[in-house]
Image (cartoon, rainbow over all chains, first blue to last red; front, top):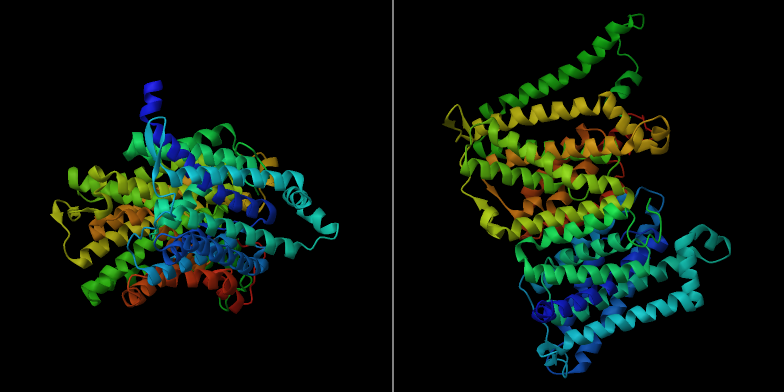
Length: 293
Length: 343
């Protein structure tokens, strides 16, 4: 057992790094659906925008490029979320399929525009200086940047938990997940909340894209892979549940990483098998934050 | 509701006589609807005699895509289950037919029937989960199932040929003779596509189809009437998967190459576009939608330099606002027969 653990330590750590990224992504997707009933299938495409922004701005040995990429990505995410909020407003009373079609259309447009601008090659992004080496973890060398990613994920999880549980904004979020009409009845402008929620949700996607760029690089098709993983995470965790997003992200991170390392040909089966197992036991996910409809 | 009630609502045409007894008017309705269909079938059957092989090939692809679209319409329009991963069953059917043809036999009905069976079996395994969850989970799960099938097709390269695709599929044989002329292949596709359309039409207009519409419109009421919505939805999912597999089998026989992307998201999205453009729930609308989608992709695809999905995305976004009920909705507006509860 210890021997197995030692042999697969790198995969397990990779799993935590992937889990961290997935949490940042999935929490945005989950909150947007939980609060605003918007199923944003363009979330993966927003992530890819972040990755390509990292390609553009991160050059050479400097932190400034990395921070510029993060700042621009945050801004783009906010704007994209705001625009999406306006676009989905007329569809609020229509079947959920219409929203899905719109966001699918947007994701196709964004992904193709990116591939026209940047081409179809796999582009890599260097780690920021100081994080480009590796450190020894229990005797195995492990990239410093991925450890930093795990730390960022943990810090973000803590921040999100503090904001949601301890602040008045968090109270508003929880109330909106539970009963949006009651929230607007006590005098809170639903449309402003929607713009803000979609803005923050999309910001999380683009920022995750920048953070992931030194690991995954940027390539066409990455958006779909990432969206798939994020969807599996929130289906497992339960829509609208932040705890669910965290647990789901950690589980899927390990499944992805260990699955690919141990049985690469059947990693997709294992991913689907995990999903199936969870849904057989809990059809609404582990932590049903909101009843699906 | 769908095709038949429309016809009965229409004012009877002059000549059929208001005083005619019910069976006669029923027969006249049948004639009025049956004759154009018969004429259309005859025109379709005569096509290869008049058009170039390339056109016959395009028509074959339209027929296959139309069958595939109608199978999705059974889910989206009739049952109210919006699937984003229907291409998975199409792809599974196509790979099955391809592998059967390469390793065993390409004698006419065998590959496509096994393809249909494979599509249905795959739908049994995955649909059970997707249908059970329902609602927005259904959307996400079907998307995930489609993507996973795509990944699997790419990864299992020893069986599927990986991202190079499964090529070298021998041409379809009828009574031992390989079909090589585009016109003969077209007839082969036409026969199975028409059988497929007929099968789906019969399902949609059977009491079973009526129950599916009931579940779409008011699931709690159907449940209180003693129906089990899960069983009906699951059965619809499996039937739709089987017909998608059939379409995939025809596709493998026509193109004689199968790519992982045929099971992937872009195919699912194109298909959903055909259904939505045509008008979900009407069966004939998606056929029209499929024709438009194939023709537009053939016409504009080469000029877009491989960026066809860009056009697809724009059409999606526009169609959601402009054509919420597709061509069928337009036809409804034109004849001033706007319906209430269509999907």
